[in-house]
Amino acid sequence: MAPRIMDDLVERIAAAEGLDKAAKPLANAVSKINPPGRVSKDLLSGTWLGHPLHPLLTDIPIGAWVSALLLDLLGGDSGERAADQLVGLGAVAALPTAVSGLSDWSDMLGGERRIGFVHALGNVTAVALYGLSYFSRRQGKRGRGLALSLLGASAITLGGYLGGHLTYRRGVNVDRHAWHEGPEEWVEVAQEAELEGGTPVAAPAGEDTVLLCRRGGQVQALSDVCSHAGGPLHEGQIDEQGQVTCPWHGSTFRLHDGKVVHGPATGPQPVYDVRIDDGKVLVRRHS
Image (tube, rainbow, N blue to C red; front, side, top):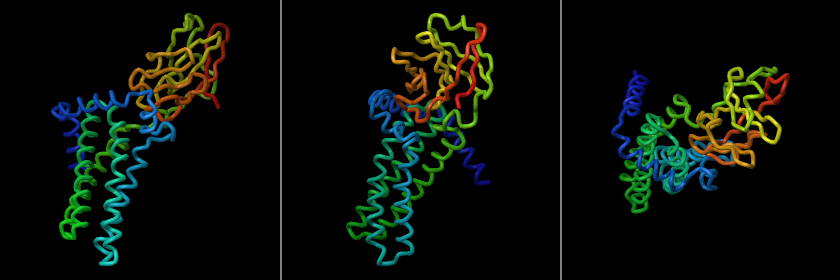
């Protein structure tokens, strides 16, 4: 019964277009402040880490607050000071966690953005409650501090549930190549004549779609599906350095090896070997 109730709640949030009045302007403002191509975007996305940064950072405040709650309930007088310090540590650690989450959230649209907006509201509420709890504790008002911590735990639980839904049910920030692999054997995907003029071409290759591009007499191929959110790379821009930028969120990849140059993507693009045989372009997954 409980999972069904929660599923209904999340779907109602996803369909609540009224949230867009606040969510859309905020997302646009974040994108203007922290656009793709900047070091700050790469840093907050986790491009340098090869993995989204936000989920990693959430462990610190949540771990601190859960530990504080256990000390409050079971630690007795000897655990009070440590509990207070953990509450404060969690509130401080939540700030960079929130900033990285805000960066990721600004790339979402539609129902995912609405769910993420409520997820953020729950977490902001939790940070405020834990902050008030910390100051109440410092003033010697432990009963009030504990009550505020319990309210904060409720808020962070709701926020965490929605965050988990975004990741594990909606697949937000999950590498789009996690379960799709291109062919291991040579397969024909295009005619060589289609690549004249350097215009990128997208062609199906098994479970994947490949981006084909002729540069300097050589045909290069990598997955056309952006690892970040599935954007069609062949519709993006290819620069003189041989880098393609996704038209959806601005992730940039090197054509020759698929490496991420700029986020928000954190995972590289699968690369394909290319062979020209009697005017036909054949590819296979690079091993």
